[in-house]
Length: 406
Image (cartoon, rainbow, N blue to C red; front, top):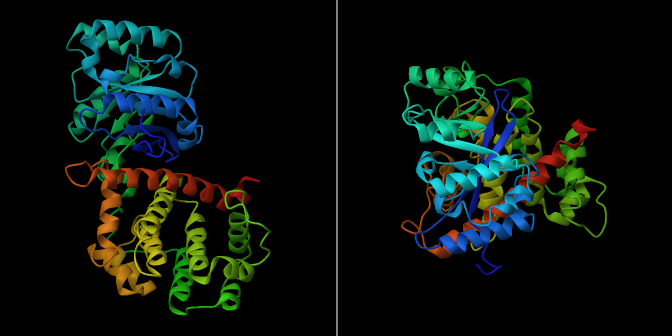
């Protein structure tokens, strides 16, 4: 088994329903050639000790495991009703595996067939596999709009729920909304929607003005408290979050000024930006979580840089999705913010000390980092930082939205 000090390299990829709420996560495991046994042992250990359940916050999730690992010790999945498995079409011709999968299906294990653009009516084995699965994922990037529509409607009439995968642009996403789909998955979530003329609502302009004041005025603890004193909701969210059990503070902080003294002004400035963005309740929660994850990863990966760089790196990660969140071009938004060059250059040109960091994080979340691109030690480092960042982001987002839930 992998040493406990080496975290399991794993990525959670959301699938959203047509209201842009979370339907399920796909859990993708990073693997290198020859490490199948280590991967298997780590996956089983992660499921058994509950780490995977915590990663997905108890939501439905589908494990994308290598085919050769599917028959091994799969009973552990039968005790996790919210965990299912992604299947590839090739399993249909593996008779021993099909028998094992049939047993799992009879005992309640959920399956999602990753059909890509395969003709599911082309063979009897594939037809048999269709009888076993609850969901089928189609690859929207490899199918014409007509073929995607025809296949989705065919599966829907058979009572099989359909997921559109690889939806990586907004025109494709808009077409998918017209189809009988259970969920949509792809990079569209993180890509800004093209707009002819950016128009910001009063709330978003107010948010940008607050962010600009925080960046330009270099406030002390007293000034920081004064800046947000009149925003009762923001102050409440900020204090609720810093006083949460996640931070386990020795005493409760009762004012923004106290929090700024305790955590430091720069960190609290980042926290105010974070709470402001989390108040955008018209945006998909998973998009907000993605921004928080990037912020935390950037901050941690910049820990070896000179003093002050970690806080700037946090801002780079947090603001890296600002154009998507605000539905406006990044260059337009930066005219309202006037960030320091180290931050703005990273956001617009991926240059400066933080540009490569952000590039690496984006490659990580796209599942594109392998040992051919970076050293294995870097992959293990990113894996640990990512898992920590997801936990932090989930806690912060929950804290920021606690008042609405009550």
